[in-house]
Amino acid sequence: MKNQQRHQTKHEPPGDRPGESGNLLFMILIAVVLIGALTAAIQSTGRPEGANIDKETLVIRASEVQRYASELERAVLFIVQQNGRSEVDIRFGHASAHADYGLITDEPNRQVFHRDGGAAKYRAPPADIQTPTGGDWEFYAGTHLPQVGSTKADLVAVLPNVTQGFCEKINELNQQDAAQPEDAGAVAAAGNDPGSCVDVGALGRFDAARQYYDAPSTPNTVDEGTYTTMPGTQGCVQCVDMGGAPYHFYHVLYAR
Image (cartoon, rainbow, N blue to C red):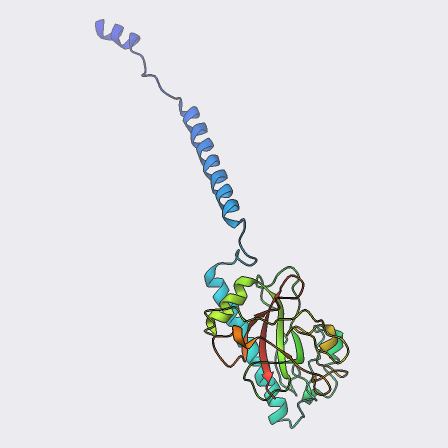
């Protein structure tokens, strides 16, 4: 009888009900997620463009660009050395390229992207390595790169408006581990003047109307004093005096 009374008067210790414990755990998880999102937003503030790409991916992208630039160089050399075409005959026509570069069917054996020419594959730039300005691959012959060939303008592939992070990684891979190479001057291309940036612009596209900026033109030259490693057959320069001081990747396809 006493045991029965004790059983009837026994109470559960105070505490949360099971449903209340679940709600509290859910609220804690929501708080953790919100704190994580806020921390990420704070850390991303003030980062240079392209900082949202992780270091490993940046190296992969840089390697992709370097390999493709080398593929384009081999295609140009094949056209000149194996197909016997002149350095001024080279063309970059393709359905996905700007119309200024002409048609890929125009004398196929001089076309970089035709199987009868250089047999290179036309590729769009990799993702996440350009600023919103972006731009497809361009091909110019308005710049003489430091200690490359003679003092004449070289045929150069340019990937315009890359991010600062990508530019720094390319230069690091090319052992440019000190100053950022610069292409100084605020002069835009006009007439027979290629301007003062390796990214010459629409006027300087290597096509039927414009090839090399030879006499009476004077080729653009980058600032050799900003290089730590020579020669500059490949790299990334900043056109410091142009609007927005953009960064441009370049690769010499044919040195003159």
